[in-house]
Length: 156
Image 1 (spheres, rainbow, N blue to C red):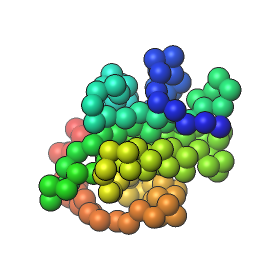
Image 2 (image 1 turned 45 degrees about the vertical axis):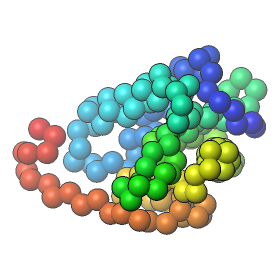
Image 3 (image 1 turned 90 degrees about the vertical axis):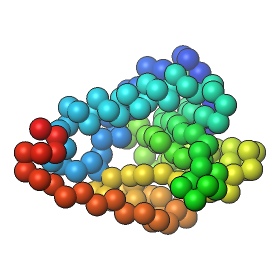
Image 4 (image 1 turned 30 degrees about the vertical axis):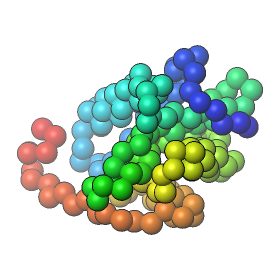
């Protein structure tokens, strides 16, 4: 397995992983809208991958894409620059093989290259697998988003 920068030939394989980003979203959120949103995030990340301050890394083996990670350099609300991981997805057939760790390692190496000292990301509160994975890598919970669901108001 190797991790490298996204290439245009990876587009369809990366887009095929977008549905993984729906995992852990509150079940009362409309599934079709969630899928449309996460697919849009990936499309935008790929379109902007070559821009300064942006990154998309792909893990591959042979000619198979195993996973990808995308994000950008941006300031934390405190003003300190950080790398924000907007999307990370691994093909479920390759989970548990170190693909996610290798992708985060690539982001950490990129952070060192650009002189940024933290990586942040968001994941669904119900995505216990992802939360456990990120904790094992050294991520700590920093913020908590709370939502009050009003019947008939959110998503429809």
